Length: 393
Image (cartoon, rainbow, N blue to C red; front, side):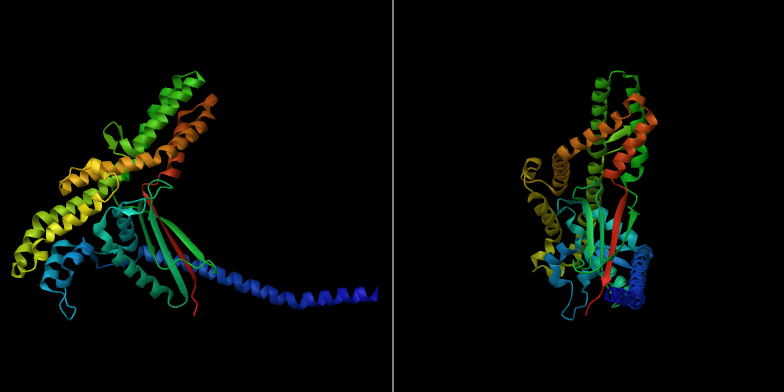
């Protein structure tokens, strides 16, 4: 009896002694966690709003290096006259832009399809941007934290189509991490009027269903309508009154290819002749004299290496013909890839609307369609995620 009481007293005393220490440890850990959560939030906000007043990169820089890289710098590493000419004509300057703007413009320009990058001319954009972001975040965190910034723009959820960027190592699985995430609007593109047009397009279409009193006929017509709308939004385009939208896939491909074609036309039709005149002193170097041809061949090689692309191209297709064939090829490839997932989406959306069949309301149906599509089609926003963890060593 006395032994049991004595033991209970010892346990109580131990708890009284250890409880303050345990409480202090919990308080310290909570304080550290809160500090790191605030740190990562503030760091992401700082990066998004910081400006790079003199950011620049070379269009087709990787291809230029492969063709005439040995002649862009002298033995001391100083830029040569050729570098000055090329940079003046092909260099891209992005003055006084925030890192949020620079990143989303980069994502929208890549056109990555199933881990295959179509726009091979902006890889220097990636490299320059990653270096500058690394410097900004390293200066902000000092030696206290490691970090990883991941940004992606995937217009269709779950489909590897769009653009992505990673800066910094992936966090080790064994460490505690703190994460901040934000959504950033992409630049002005054909997508800007997307959602308002979809709503205008859907409302009168759904209104036609109100006159159908047979449940089976209603569901059949609804399925056709949803199919037409989804395929229109993604591929075929939709029109309403004086407005039109060419479709997510078409608009994305056209946006990126239009940028490439504009740059190539400026380079090939005007700039290359000036470069040729400037480097005639190097007539013994064939690489100089085939500078434009080298850039053309680089992109053509990238296009013709795709499996199945041959049926869209003539044997001696020009670059313009190859780009046109490439657009058709990509849209068809993605359309086939999405066929089954799209049918699953249609069945689910039809099922949701059929649940309100007995009290069908146009506004409710339009709201359901918009909500459904916004969760799966994200053409207007890119997602940024900043992860930090304590530095070791």
